[in-house]
Length: 443
Image (cartoon, rainbow, N blue to C red; front, side, top):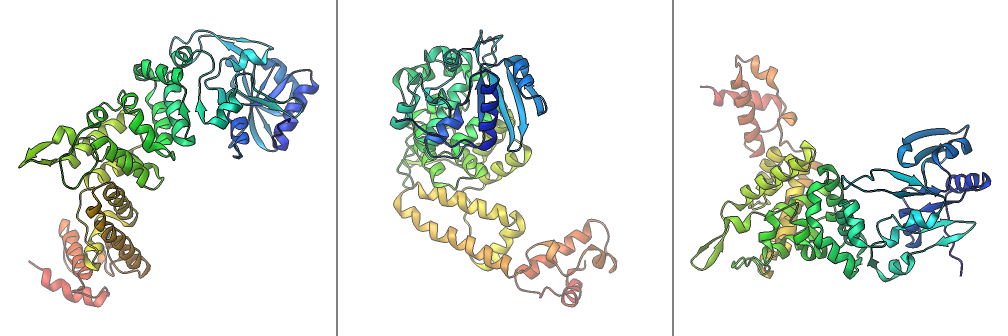
């Protein structure tokens, strides 16, 4: 039975225009894979037998963006947005483990498909021909198998980032790895050190957000250990601690899957206990990890900066890791102090970190989950009621304090004392009450 994929009108128009000019043209790669899985693709790529000059000629009158003509890629801007069109090609050597040193254009679709990474990404489709699947990608997709096109060693040697892409695909889609492909991943894992940090970061983020991240981190920690060497010591490390029933690596992996699918939270869970093996001491036959939160935060900051994460993400992850052992209290005054120190969003994120952490510990620890949820609810109540917990909400400001004769840093000290008095319900947050209260803070 002929497989039918519903292509967007602008994509169909581009394919038809190339066909009318005498060239083969197909939707290829991820958009075909996604469509076969019933997923709406985020974008569509087209491959064609036309070379770049011929593509431009076929689309005279259209807005064209040259995004890589050297490698055969032209973008056409149509009613449905930007669509990338790439000439069929074969690749030369990849001396930088990233880009081919040279490309040769071809009119043969199979030759073009044979250079692609995985069989599930090496399918093509047009309404005229239906699905073209030379390497068995459709069956691998049905079976949940990730398999390289051709020789795995060659594919991963061409571009080592494909190793991370493989792990990411398995995390996102639940694929299992075909044996030869898996052997090549492990055998060539050190080539990841040749890849630009930004590219590693992008794939790693998507891996962490995948539905199957826990399994991939447990199964491929040795591969990830090339990028995150501290992870290697976590594998099989017995915590010898009544609060824990898993080794450090398994605990980390489970906390990642327990955390919401938010980049900062899952990064925090990945790093939160990564320094435990280095901090381990046995005290009265009980495992102690004193200082591991601070040490893990240092590792998180150093590693994220190496991988070129933005400053905001680095700062937030570092803070969450540093404080993941905090004992939070759910009473109103305590939560107001936390809101003042952390802010609403950060406090909720810290609670999510504590929830994920305690979810992967011994069963009796899970009683703490009630408290973490209570802190979240109390924070939401406080915010909804517009109760004062920050200087910006205080009914007096620096100018009011200055008029009373205070100067310099003393103004800030007085404001903070007044804020603490309001938070602790000792003074009403009204200007008159606060000004009357200032006399009690004079030297």
